[in-house]
Image 1: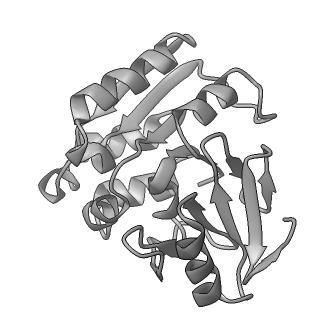
Image 2: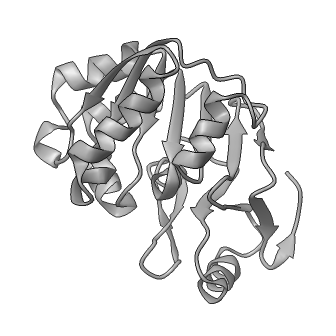
Length: 206
């Protein structure tokens, strides 16, 4: 991925599209939404909501209903992700997304995409280390980027557990609902105030 943007929620994504976060992310062009993570939360409704968001900004949008492992090697899905100007990873179950994309043609296409935006908990999945949302423990991610571990805001007790288990080797970015972080492939930057970055239990800046 040449550019990766993680947003804490749809509200943060709206901020990005409206230019409020400082991320230059035009919605004009060909946008592909990968609906995998939304498989258990109402995939059709989530696809419509995300599609409207980008259509209102003038984009051409296609939502790919890759909701199970059997469709992850579908050549059309992989090609659409590779060809898109922007790939959006819908929010939902991070663990389901990891299992569906792991070692698949679609997963490789996400890794190779030019620009990717990940919404909510799924933003953790492409990293070398992801956070298991069931208890906050670090686990192996897909390895599409490194240098930062990303999670969304949960209870302070669970976050402190996550920070302690990670230690000081790699920074952790905790995205609030309006949190935004961005990588240009070389460095990470925090793009909104609703993000806390730490090494172990110490707050740091990227």
